[in-house]
Image 1: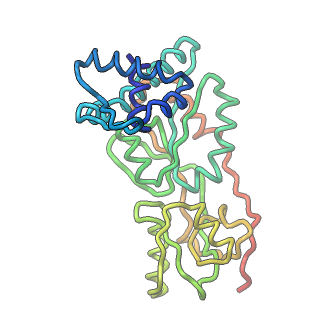
Image 2: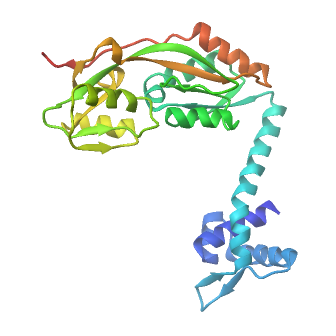
Image 3: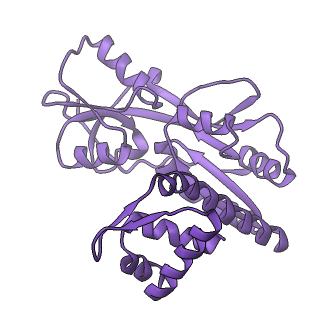
Length: 281
């Protein structure tokens, strides 16, 4: 059944039996046969040929397509879980905020793999609020944020300090600002209000893009000192020093995941490196 659904999905997306066959590395008669079998099982027509090449979808095909993606994802996840259980492997899903993902998480993942060889990791990059919500909805096992968010049945542990700096040329602008739910947005708004700055701003939902623009001499932004390599910056006061946090749920069903988060709290070494170019005041 799942092979037929995979074939159906390819035909639905390409609207072409030949292209679907190419994507699936099979011959066209195989695709036609599987679609015919699926239509017989469902007792409905899924595709209508309109001319030699054009294929139209029926309302029944539209409904099936809406559900097929989830079915196939669940099936692949189930196969992976069974294989991992057989091999005594635990699957762990981590989400981290942008700055933590780029500047701290890579070294941490390497260390975790060394200390927990039977763990496989999936990594997601989100802003701080999205990480918290994903943890609450059991979409991830634990996360890293740069904003002191809290919620019921969620534990928050401070891990490392992070100094924010004003990078780029504030005289020229424009200001490059993260979205409201990001960890650094609050500090940017505080700075603008404290200095009565009312100027052009661009909202950019990606730290790396902001850093790339700054390196090209465009705009100014408040970013982590870790991100300010090769960018002129002004160091800000202690009010602009924040922390990275590890967040976990109160109860974890897998003891191995608890061992990981405890190791992170006790053993992980988050070093600050500063290879940036400071502005001379």
